Length: 478
Image 1 (cartoon, rainbow, N blue to C red):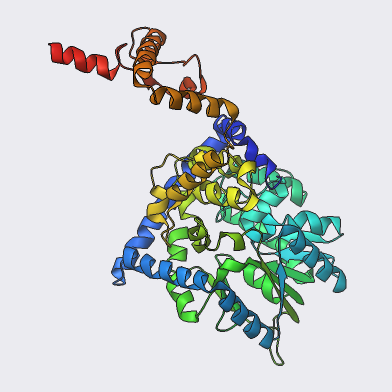
Image 2: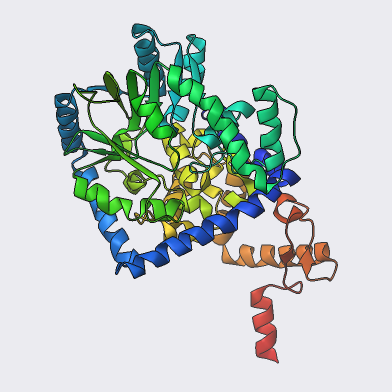
């Protein structure tokens, strides 16, 4: 999926996803699991004597304090990481990320690279660049492995294959692993996971390069913090002789204590766990006497549009810790799935990030992909006002005249009428009667003749053929 072009077709893709019966079954099954697990995880805070609102206020302050002096903390991180034996590189955009990684692969004779889940590498379209350079990239997170076999991008940042059914995964495994397909039930899921693990183990043991993201960068120690529920993260970061960490510049936090605070919220928000199965702090390179670890560690810190958000109306979005809670509670996301959003980040976070990082003109529909219910904002562990940011993007669309011309024309005509009260009253009287005629006396419009998309999927109630002013005047006479 291309970075920005696909987002332009959100409405078309949304229609396709709504008509996909298999996808809809998968989404209906998944949403209660996410919501229920988070609710239980947050309830566990109270058992520990903690309060969600006060804790997220603290987390918000940590992220704000870091962003206020982001250059300082990045400089400290670079100094500490370099002192521990790592190399720190900087990338302006995804193209530069791909160039740096391919160059590292060539210099170190890499033919196979194992990957732990990294959304930044998705931004950079890194797999395509590696394959073009003769390096085979293998995703090792189970969900990422499944979508790589399917030739698809992730549909969710926490559960990349949430849109896939058990039968679809079985078909992918049978084809990729060279065996006949088998009828599978839910009891066979552990068997399928072991099958994938056996295949991936061969790659773990032979890869020359491991590529990971980082949930956080810790300036105090020059470390990358990696939070996973599968052992693949540790295999990718410790077995190959070269480990490359690719992450955004906003991921830095000042101290280990700050990381500990954020970890009280991240796993609970993402999967409902008090703590993830694996929490790794990766510092430097293999030292004398160490039994494992890379001989060379390289951090690639990426801008790709993030720096321009500092000090802007959208800086709050940089607080995001990629937990996925916003999409897990979003009725739009779970009606459509992640691929409708057209780029790396789906759901409410994608409705803000994609226009900001790829260009509002390339993703004009996404700020409108919301009901405005604020479920996303209410569960965000760092209190990002997602609906407000989407609303600001809509305002920017108007200011930059990025709306489709029919919409601009309609709003211009309405504005002209609104400034002329007498003409406005006559026009609304005609409109009320026209709508009543469309409703055929039922009080509801099934198909709106001038704009059929408004009522193709919903009923629009109408007044009884008269405007408010007419009804009010009639009531006074009575």
